Length: 559
Image (cartoon, rainbow, N blue to C red; front, side):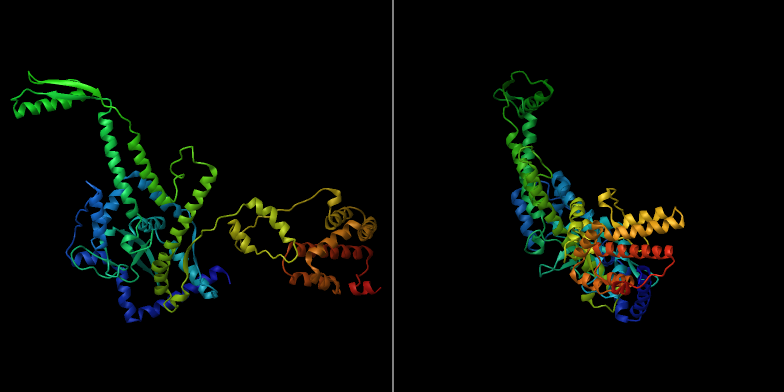
């Protein structure tokens, strides 16, 4: 059955299933929510038309304030903590770059919808249909990246917009919602929708893609990576501020102003302003009786501040990417061996992110598509969303090893496995196939088939008499040629004794070819089958030249 036939049958099944859905009152109520927006309905019910401005806790952040935000989130008030996490990504370019790098790694992965284990033909067709519906989602790369916002915050939510085309329900788009729109239930696991006024309400079924990402074990509110990054962020801000203050006065002499006793407050302020301005403008005025003394210029170095900043950024890189060589190479420790180790760690993190995200996609995208379009399928038989995490092997190494291994007796190498290892997709039925023919022009390496074919081409150019004589001589020579016998013996060894015994018992060329066609596919079987076919061609030509019918092989052997 072709893919297009299977797809047509699946479409017919969808139409039938949709008829069952429409006739079910309970399902009717559920599907009514698919065409609406829970966000819009919740805000309208609470009479909220404009979202209040989000706070920015990063302003004036201290270690004590950070501790208060983190512990408050554990008590249920997590909006300020989430707002801080937003500020961290906006204000710290290093955190943003490392997180963006980690998110974009998944965008380069291929993905597919895999049928369940031991799938039937119908289940494979359903998986193909769901994959087609998934690929129809607009801006799917943005969906992946928005879902990965959960890496830092612990969770992310996107509202699904459904559309119906004839009898099929599609996911038209997904809209990202800021994490402050959600609240965590008392079980510390379940996410609910909140508007800041009414009590949180459960999320509608089949309406949300909620991805929870565990950077570490524990409650959901403590699972985000930003809770780990927040402390280096605070210390780095202190060091950056101190470095800026140091650079502002570096190289400038200390200016000390003195005023006479009895000076008024206004005169003191005038002197202070002059002392501050003269360092930048090299000019100023002060009242008579006052003076400014210039002391030794400020000394010091920026190394302590830069070392602290570097430590904070390296800690952030380790937490996000598992290493530092993909971001900061100092030329000292950045060896190739260490780089390979860091690359392995990066791939392990990528694979973990992909598996967690694939689980959420299977639950919140694939499963709703199956429930709505294939309502009679048991959830245990739903297909799964899968990222392709296989790494292609070295084609050169395989090209040298596979032909040798294929000739080993008892070795059975699957074509599907080899395609997967090399990352080469299997060609379609009507697709052109790339092939190559290897010709060895050395006389001692010519096979019997090549010699016989060349001789037949030469005979075709001569007279009928010379053709008969040359063909007969060629066949006689071939029968006595030791190289040809060695060639046949080598092929027999490659075939295996069981196949050779069957061929010995054959009573004719047709029976021998039938035995080969039913044998396990291999290069040796193909080569021997080609030899027998050319033997038959040569024998037929010999008989035609002598105008004599060929005798069966069993009679020749008895004679």
